Every structure is written in structure tokens, then in C-alpha cells.
Image (cartoon, rainbow, N blue to C red; front, top):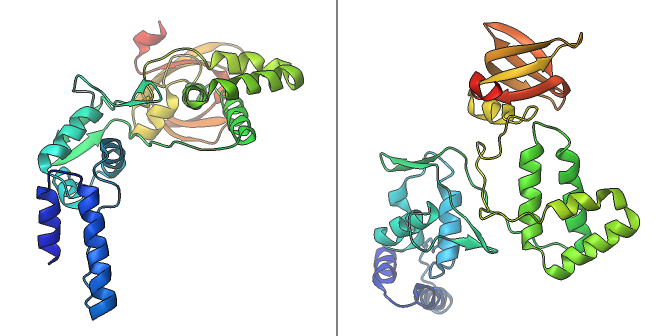
Length: 278
């Protein structure tokens, strides 16, 4: 019966969610009236809504052990539907997915041997908070943006939150900060810069300012080049460093086989190649 139910829903061309709801009620009836229990894993989301499917797929494929072919059985849809959703997620369609007016595209996806790998995994979160919670979150991101290693990450996340706010919410935040925290107004106003994307990979969040690319190199085991100011104010370049750890103040790196500790505040610039720092 389990196989028949799943296959009938997969073949159903109208609203699959309606069919699933009918089957749920039918199995509930069998259990209650006749004591017949059928254990079946229904889809974890409303599968007729393409946005829900794509968000689920984006999260499911974060695990490198998960296979694309399993999605059709999990979601009770055709393999063609899954492939179309992945194409939309990658931006390979004329109608890319948009969230709050911004494109949601994961460009650095590669399919190999039935699995999908991403240079940076996307973690869709759409928060619903009161205005105070929003302000607290934005203030926290503002604080994190003072660290050059996390600056771009914090700013892009803050912009993503700001974009989702209503005009009323933005006006209230600007009003409150103008009256109570005038030194922070510029931070909130800067979040209104227009940008088409809603997802930024680790690479897209990296830059040469300060320790701007070092976190990406730490997380993804890439080598990097660092322009560093020593305690005596001399400036040196460390090429092909491997970053091993960061405690918020100090980077632990390996340079020419030797372990070193570099203060984050002393990192003037950083890049993936020495040419970026010239």
C-alpha cells in the first residue's frame, strides 16, 4: 500500500498536496476504525509550492552525502521536477527564484556522480521578529562588522535583513536611532544600498581590506597572502599562508612550515594571490 500511495501521488498531475491530505485522512480512518496502521513517510513540506521545494532542496543538498536521485522519493515528485528546481536554484532559467525582490541563486554548484557540491552552502532563513528584536540583531551585526575578518559577512547579512523590512519599520528604526543613537544612523542608512543578490558565497563576501579573505581561507583550507604590520611598524608580506585558527583577535597560520600568530588588527590587507595586494 505504501508504494501504491507514493506512486499514485507522484503520477498525479493536479495538486499533490490535496492528494496527500486525502491519503493522510484515509490512513487515519483505517487506523481509528479498523486498527490498520500503515507507516508511511509523507513529504516533509507542501510539495505543490515550488518555493517550498526549492528551499528544501537547497538545505538537503548541503550534506555532501545526499544524492539528487533521492529527492524524487522524498518529495513524491518526478525527477524532472527536481532537476528543474535545481536549475532554477542555480539561476539557469529565464525566471530565477526571487526572495523579497532579490535573486536567490547558488551559482557555485557542481553535480558529480549523483551528488551536488557547493563552494558555499546556502542557509535560507526568513526571520519574523518584533522591531526591538530586529534592532538588536542589526546592532549585533554592526558590532561584528568592526572586525575586518567578518566585516563583509556582517554587512551583507544586515543588508539582507534590511531589505525584508517594510518602509514603516525602516522609518521607525531611523527615527529611533536619530533621537537616541545619532552616531549609528549612518550604519542603518548604508544598509539601503541596492543589490540584486540575496545570497553571497564565502568568496563573494571576501575582499582585500584587512583580513577580508582570511575566514574563507580558514574554513575552506585555501592558502592566502597577508600584508602585515609588525610591532615595530615595519610591513611584511606572508605568501601562501595556511590559516588554522582564529579566536577573534589572533590568527594562527603556517608560513613556510613554521607556526605563527598574527594579530587581526595588524593585518593591513589579505588576498588569495600576491597580485591582489600589489
